[in-house]
Image 1 (cartoon, helix red, strand yellow):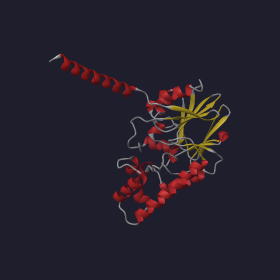
Image 2 (cartoon, rainbow, N blue to C red):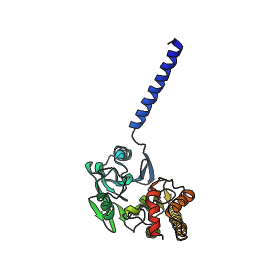
Image 3 (cartoon, rainbow, N blue to C red):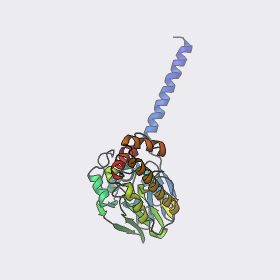
Image 4 (tube, one colour):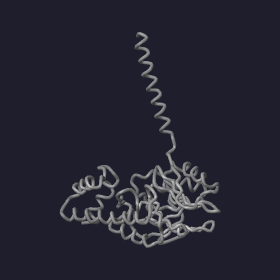
Length: 287
């Protein structure tokens, strides 16, 4: 092999080696999380799963949701940017792993976890088909409403009814006139988890209850912080979707045709959770 060919082979091997090293390093990098200030003493953490609410008090921190298990250290690091105090409570908006997957590590770090009774039951009964193994449910539950008081501040959790699942909690920060919705508001179109007890018919009624509260700011389950008008628009869009899908089903369209309709009109990818969880449920609930 002459020197020219040898140099080219060596350069090629070096390129592949460097690419492999870069790939393995990127695979080992922790998920990127971003801490944003919402209002006085209230922050939210975005990235790699559902938004996390961070409420700072003089006696510790109240979190709303805790993302995936892999995000635990990142969440604690984000909290330490604004307070040295520990997380005392985690209030779960619902049972899905991108919102409650960090429960186990939160327990081991000393936090109490609170959810609706249905959200706890859904974890115990493994209602989420794609959930990681070993998820830990809340030990403290409520059916209609509960509050956490810490350091002179209150966070209120209320169950208004079915929607994304059958166990969605709306979280209210009364002193800050702020609402946190979990996935009752997330993305541009709703994901109705019918295996987890969700309902597109009840979804708008559930949001109607929440909209009666006195608030001006909304932390959604995913996406940027918005306001009351944004939540109202989302609620109205859910109603419009329900009406359109109902018309399609009652005109005689079968499940495959409804799936194609959702793909075309709402950009629901063929193998998405919307197609897997929501479309079969539509055929029963909206017939």
